[in-house]
Length: 178
Image (cartoon, rainbow, N blue to C red; front, top):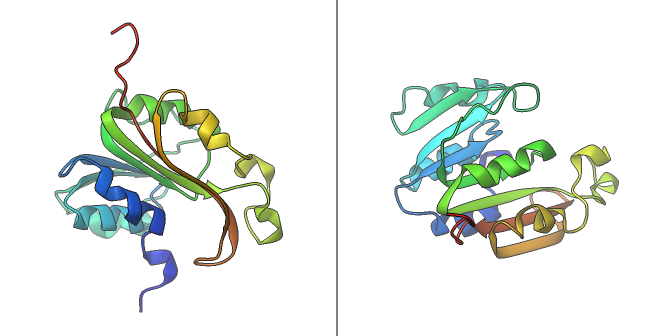
């Protein structure tokens, strides 16, 4: 039986085709690997990062998946100066990493990000404002350095009611001073 938590996010499914075919995609805070697995089926090389890789251990022998165990909140950025054709982040928020995501996105790379927002506290976890995006926060974080392709904020009924904020953005402008 496939659980809703095993299926890819509809937002990721909608925007993954924007990523360069056969590119390298970072699945940040990959959890049980639902997006790692999905992106792999689309022909991407996937770098999956999480503090606990037990949910993706079965992918260790897959030549198209690289697993990196790292505490993203307490340790250093584990990816050095690597760049990615796509970056996927869902249900995770650690604000100090937002600028790192922009840096790690290759030219013409696509960022697909979605997580919970203020107002979610009436529907369930997370309730802590530290883990909830403020109105327009993803637009503020990524609107200047990236080109916004799609944005959404509101009540999402699937897989259960929650207030979410989503963005899909592309690094399409040449860096200044280049």
